[in-house]
Image 1 (spheres, helix red, strand yellow):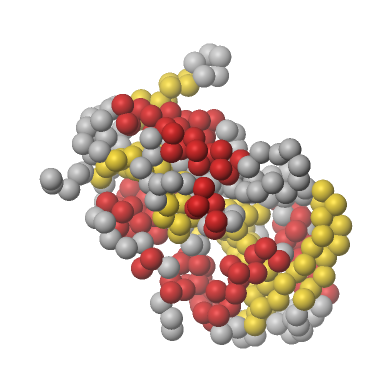
Image 2 (image 1 turned 30 degrees about the vertical axis):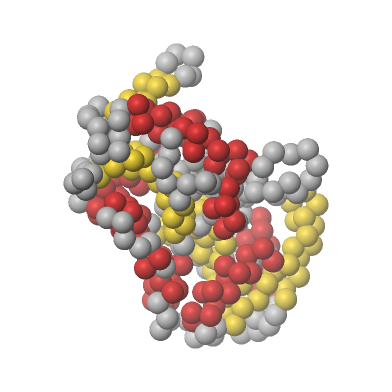
Length: 315
């Protein structure tokens, strides 16, 4: 059998990123349209033949949940249009923070979404920086899990920081930070926090020495920005020379922009997995378009995805 043609389509919420990915890949973005009905219901449709093609559907599943539902319907439409394979490309996988039962009688949202994508007909998933890497195990189909270190490491190198130290804003992020710190042969510290309730921190302590250090905080998600602002202030109190944050997914809800702009952070560097709601002098965006374009090409040509992890390429 001849290698099927790769076609890239976009959901409504991620068209800004899909256009960049398609341009880097070297193909025009596929023609599709989502019809909106007066009651709020919608119906995606492909406006070109995809019979026998390998279809990549780019859509992050950030709020509102219409983005997730649109992706589910696009998968189903592609399967019913006789696509050879359907691969959802989900730069930001929503509901990932619901990865376990952390209290009684709650849903495991990340697992529910995995079931929905598979039931709709997805053949594999390409995503980036899951909140918990074990979410890959919620799928019974292949998952290509890209890491933002491939984007962040070159940026950190260009900063030429003298006394580089990496900080995890909580204990759960320690493994993610350890890999990058190891790459740079740098020290790492942990900001251990205790929450009263969601989005509200009761107390925080720094584990490690940051005196006269240029500290880089790294995490997967910035939601209200409260943890970042408090972590940065605490690191400064402990003697850090500069503090900046590199965050993969800029959810930035509530008073996030206000929290970031009023913080002691030098800058907040984010990826374009989620579009910014507004501009900010403190927020810089790095694009993941090239990384996803290469991942799509490798998936289409049955090549390794591991080669995209820069931290695996030791200095």
